[in-house]
Length: 101
Image 1 (tube, rainbow, N blue to C red):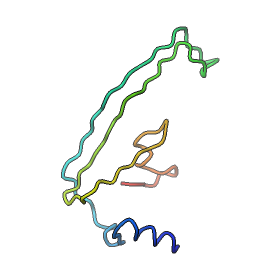
Image 2 (cartoon, rainbow, N blue to C red):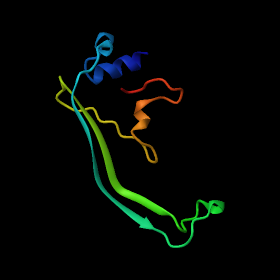
Image 3 (tube, rainbow, N blue to C red):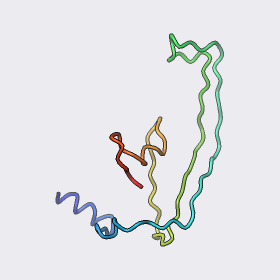
Image 4 (cartoon, rainbow, N blue to C red):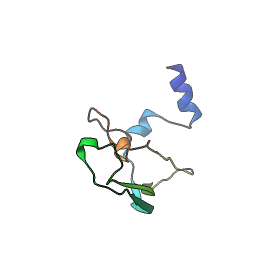
């Protein structure tokens, strides 16, 4: 518990009162950047779906969703998910509870 408290203090002021207030969003939107595809020759087969034959790989791109609060802080808070995930990672938890919204 002491480590958690120290961690919260190290990252700035935080209080349960602030957490209970709704965030007013001034602006939000999204943008897609870049992107390329690589098509492997051959025919795709569900019997050997790990084989590259006939598959298309998508990469070299980004999708950014943003929200700007009406009373924005000086520095942004950025969440980046791991590989093979999406922004959905930050929206819910495996048991269906709300997460980092």
